Every structure is written in C-alpha cells, then in structure tokens.
Length: 322
Image 1 (cartoon, rainbow, N blue to C red):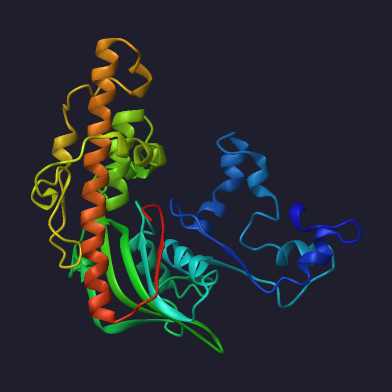
Image 2 (cartoon, rainbow, N blue to C red; image 1 turned 30 degrees about the horizontal axis):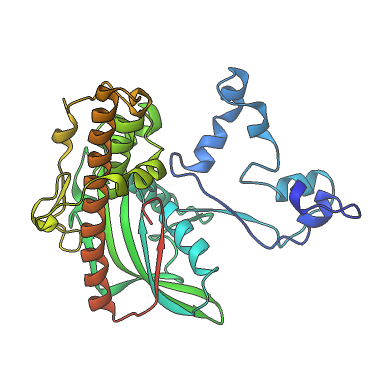
C-alpha cells in the first residue's frame, strides 16, 4: 500500500475506494494456507508479516471493519494461476479480442478446483467455478481427456489457451485448450517438485538446474542458447528433450535424458579460461541451444494449430514460457 499512499491520504482512505483485490499463489490455495499461518508464524516457519491484515484474503475488508471504516464494495478474491496470467495480460493489451496462450511450469491443482466446487467457494475464481466469464468452446481440447477420473494421481495446470473478448460487462474467456501435468513426485519436496512435472516450463527449468544449479535461472538459459552452434540438419527430427506435439496431446518429455548426463556435477561457475573450462562452457552452450530450439519448434507448431482452430489474428503469450 505504501506505493499508493500520498502525503494527504492514509492507507485506509485509499482502501475505501478499492473495488476488487485479487490474490494468487500457484503453490498453495490461499485460504487454507492462511488458516495455518498462526501456527506457522509461531514456529518461525514464515515471517510474522504474513499475518498483516493487508496480506490476508479477508483484507482490506476485515481491517476496515476493525477501524470502523468498512467499505461495502471492497473485497478480495482468489484467482486460479493461469486465469491470473490471462487477466493480467488481457487488461494490458490494446485489442478487444484474440487468442491468449498460457505456458507455465506449474499452475493450480485440479484437486483444489474440484474441492472448491464441492464446497461452493464463491471467493475462489477458477475456470470451473465462474461460468459467467469462462466457458468451454465447442471444440475445446483437454489432455489427458479423462483427467477427472484418475484416482490417486494429482494434476496441475501446464498449458492453457483461451479466446478472449472484451465486452461491456467485463472480459469473457472461451477455453480452447487445457493440458494438465501429473505431479510425478511428492509435493512436499522443494518447490512442490516442480522440476519433475511434464510441462514445457518445467522441462526448461530442468536444463536451468543442470547448467546453473538453479531451476529459476531460465532467463540465463535463453541468453546462453544463441552461443550454441546451429544444427545443419532438420531440427524438427532431432529434438533432444521434447517430442511429439502439444496440440494433439502426443507431447512427451524425455526426462530420462537428464539422468546421468555428462558434467551433471558441474555448472557454469566451473567454466574458467582453461581448456577444460572452455570445453565445459561449449557443452553448456550446446545444451541451452538444444533446449531453446526444442521449445521454439514445439511452441510454434502449437500456436500455429491454435490459430488455425480459432481463426484469431491477435495473439498474447503469458506465463513462465512466453
């Protein structure tokens, strides 16, 4: 709130004008997470600032009530992860309709969607709970097709595509594509075992972890990729990490290739001016180049098919892999 305050206005006065505040966290459902916060703060698991009224999903309404400055129009909702990416991109774009493609490493959990729908949680705004603004297109494609009938397997959002239209009553989305990735490892692991998921973004992060020993240095992988030597043969037939096609659901991630790769114990920090350091750098440059080419070939094919399906000419890319 500090960025919104002026010398003449308090945070409470600014909050009284707030119509809607949106909260999102792709690791946890926010409300259950907040309900555990008093214990977690008491055990020093998280900073005490997490319990600030300004950070809680019930605020600023709850805070304003306590200070007798309740604003009836002020509210906060929880927005599912891919919709959060879509809304943020659409509201900033200069056109009123088009295709918006979300490619992220890890989005919301399908289990959370189903549980919220069973409990009829009105404050949780996800694709299955807001039919007013999100509907399925007649030719909607979802993979796996039986994602809701696989007991014992947890899924998270991987890639999503919508056609959006800005109308007088708000932005409306038509879902044209959704792919889920199984949680292949226990979610209790670091970063919810994100790197073990079979999404485009997660695969890219595996390479980031291998080269830089940090799953979140994907921007450095992209910067390193142009230094790799170009392939002389058709790269479409020589993809190293990603095979098949997103659009028809035949996509496969070659995660086994990451196991026992050469120099897996090394990183870019070991690339010095010695002959061995230079050979190591060349190896990492080629690795980044192959990952980037895999991504570009796969995504270009995916988007081309989506454009053919929808006929849309305006395109927005959002999420971790844009």
